[in-house]
Length: 503
Image (cartoon, rainbow, N blue to C red; front, side, top):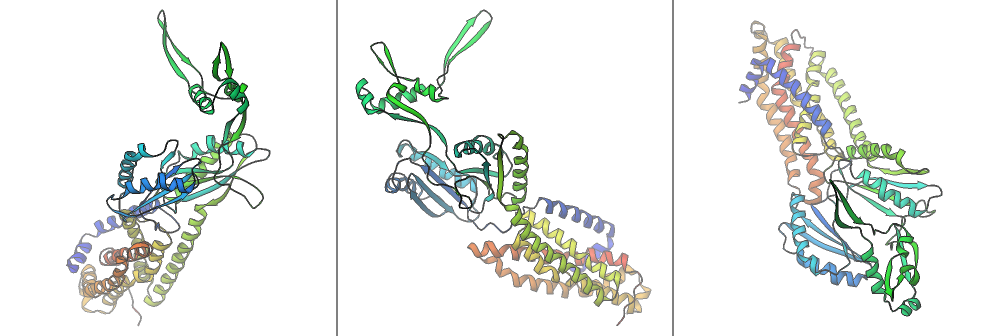
């Protein structure tokens, strides 16, 4: 079988060369599209439910929200773990699924269960499923600065200008707004005045809710024209709030401003963000979509921030203090440097020990071709280029030339020393030389591959860390073996025409 493979490659040299060029182009395209990150994503398929219950104590949140949700989520197929954390006014329920579970299927199962229990949960709560991200999905962090701007103003810029723009970037799951104060209108009823006009706080609340909306009032025909009639009641300013009629007492309207104080305030906060220990700050946190290319996400976010800078209010600055791309560049750069240094060292050693420049060049061609083939296989299997997977390629670098060295060395031996070969066509001599070592070379590479196979059986966290290393090594060694029996003999038949071999 191996002999037939070598025979086919030498008989169809033009086809093999074209296939090699296609491999190079495909490998380069695969490398360009390969997700690049600092490290492999070790998180499991996970769905989070976050519910907010203003005013509830942790005990109430646990008993009235967390417990009913946990009971409802029990029994979902492929579920591995269910846990919750209850705090003041908020609950975080996490459902972990088996590795390999489709995240969209898992979210659908959770959404169906959650909708079935929605009517049994207390009124006034809000929230739902968290975005499709992972614990390692924090891609980009920045603060919104502005001299002379209050926390409310900076938070408003983040909420209404920056956050919507960044959420449109491909690969961004969500943008969390942290710190600052969310602007709101506060109504402080005066108990004495309420008692004087016979109103309760519940009536005040109902009046505000009823008057804070816009309604349509039908259409009005005017000849060939139709006019749309609507009433505007949405509250925009404090004066709008004060003007709301809460009671009609004997023809006299009692307005909200007569019985309560209206002022500007902020929504209840559950925490703060501080910067450099000098005071509060407003922070934006960009979360990447699960499986997204971290480098492309950061590039998209950076470009979008540059695009919206002219639209920001005067004096507002965006200061970045965490950028995943920096970590990615350092991690991948370290491995890339090791790959380059190892490649140069291998080339020098090949030239020194083979004693033939053309033979060294022929053997060296297996390095880029094997790497490009590995990138294609990584892209096909959904792997990302990170510290572990590229580290596996660096580990295998010295072993990639083993098969090619043996093949080329035997070809040189036959062409330079075998007197009988002088009467035979060069292609036949090359075929005989490669056929002699095909089985030993293949056995040697397969033995090395078998050594790394146990790593593929690792499960859990260990598997997510070390399986990419083993897979990359297996892909690279397998590619080098196939190339050593096809492309390398073809290149040798072209390059090694007149050779001399010094003992």
